[in-house]
Image (cartoon, rainbow, N blue to C red; front, side):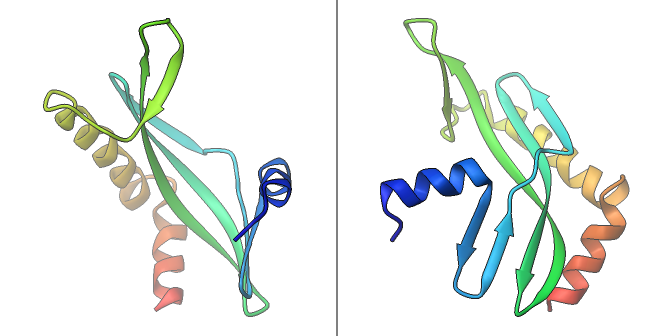
Length: 113
């Protein structure tokens, strides 16, 4: 388990180490929003066993304002937000499979099995 100091260093440097794997976090290459639901497509470079690979990943979050007007993030959805989440996730999937991210994602998937 990482100490608080080590965790803050990881966040600042955008690197994460896990056993023999080093993951470098990237800025999102594409975002999809529907209401407060948002997906972001990332291309992360990982080193596994001395070999560097690029992997596409998708993150999901829902943003909302609390009673004090502060922006907050959650992963919980109410019934009306489920279709919006599905649409945002579907658009990210479409981008990966048919858009700019398709070739790299397919190559990464084929090489990882």
